Image (cartoon, rainbow, N blue to C red; front, side, top):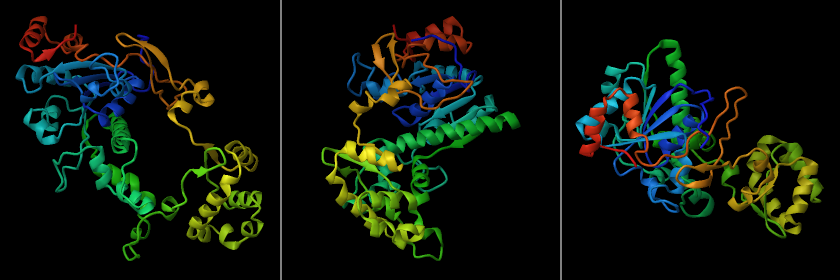
Length: 403
């Protein structure tokens, strides 16, 4: 890796990352990219994604590599009093602590918010877990699939496709991760003004309900309304990539002008001039009819022919692309979205790039995802532990340092 100094907007911020799998690590990797010193506190077994295949080296799976760069690893048994006390010493000088451990378990460890606030009142303490502690679901275990079902997402697939379904990405983890990042950033701004840290809760269930329903709340927006939910445009049966003569294309006429130009281009002038196409409310009520017209017309031309037409009439369109296509995409190539660099133990790897661009405080890729316990000793030294204390923790097995 580069070993360069942090340049991003979070340079100088220290984060204790007590998260695993994808939700928390996704958020804290972005913080690391933006310059934060992220200390990944792992169990002695390590983050479970370390062993999700494929990998070149056991414990360094590709999912782990792609959400844990720009972090250092401290591996310890937090049920051990000495290890917990060492973490508390680190917390005295941390800016942020992020935990995906359920709150009751954190309190049993002596690592709840009140415990940490007592030693560091400026700490931003963020809990990211399944359900808010304020309601009857508090403390329930949850993973991405569970939240997709609970929040209504799987049901909307049922309404559109005839069967409940999960999104083909871990959307609940990643959306909540972004919520977590946003919440922490705003709490840091509040601390600049007040000088005080605070507790921040970012539950998955509530985050996904909030994410899903700006468009789907519909008639239930009005307490005396018809109560009907679901955004018709999104749920329309013909809203899907359209089959062309040689593949599939995504296209979306949206404004009255775009629909009129598109309909004229396919020879449907009589519909292009219709009031129900040009009036926004009428068009919204009849959008399923328009999508059916698109689905019937698209097989007549090749994908390239459609893309040329849409470029001419300024209608948004893109071909359906797979990951293999994206790895060769000229736009992503031009902006360097798939950086290649040499990992100390894994050799050359391709990473998912950072899409956020700052004009004067750019993100940087300084550290590859760490081996389990790779930085345990150096982190404890920074925390003020004496060499004899560190040796004792290592020899007892309470802390692990990779060789």
